[in-house]
Image 1 (tube, one colour):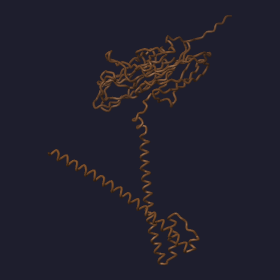
Image 2 (cartoon, one colour):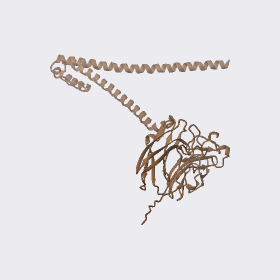
Image 3 (cartoon, one colour):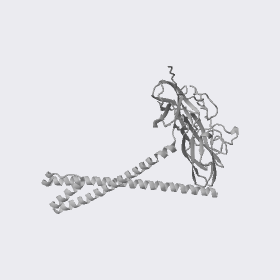
Image 4 (cartoon, one colour):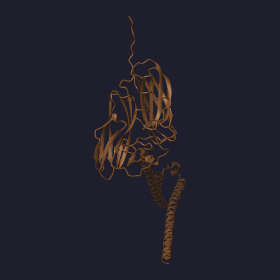
Length: 432
């Protein structure tokens, strides 16, 4: 009896990306375009533009084109609507769907007509409404259904959603990762929070986790990973070969070029061996070296708390200072009363008052002083001298504060006088 082992496998017409990605001038939904470091990234042309107008520009999510021109050639004009979010990154399996919401707000001073259409991803995107009117200040929420057909080719697709009004077009870049419905391999790309926001020229590190889902035999896997923008342009890439059994975790390190414009980017990875493949990506931001507006926005609450704390400390210090002055003046009055009691020979009341004064001043009265009158008188004299010194210091500070205030008033008067004389001189010259 003859037995033959049969194994089922999936054949895809998609070609595997090479080690060094080829450079293509335009973005295509069926290919992975790239640019060389230093080249301007390609951006999608807007429907209705002349061929000579598409050009290239700065890669910014949710970018806006006024009057069908590229950002470099258009005149500045206030936007009359905003969109949220400014980009979409979608992961799908064949035959499945994911729904997102696109919010459009009229921030202009007149009603507007809006139309929405997909660009280069028509087979993946559907809207619950394609055209509508927005009153002043009105917000419209559009349901966007992203879906992949059962026979969609597993790949990464780049396109955009174009939102049009009578005066401007806004492009929302879209990235869609499509995998098999029942994949043999699963890859997951995860960028830690530390690398979610980087500067040009810095390194980005991502963990690439590869999992065996179908008990396939151990093999060598090609692991390709790259930094891409939301239009498919490649800025850096690497490829490694690893020995794979059931689970592998690879740390991918890539460099953001110094010339990379600020905006949203992808850390993309594809693992493959023959007919087996799986893709995934995670997003991160490339920012400028320092943005004061962003810093001020994130630090606004901290600054408010800091200013409030400073004023609170000043008020507490001033309150304590005033209370200290009041306490010393009260002690001085009690000391004068003590002197009068001593002169009158009312020693018992004088001793009671002295103990009270010492307690208020925060000092203890020694038993030896209470038993020895001469020593008691010496301590009274010492306390009187100390109080006088404190009062003289308070008077000195008040005099200095008054002198500063008078000096400032005098300077202001001189400045006002000079300004007045100058005005009179100019007036006389003009009359001549």
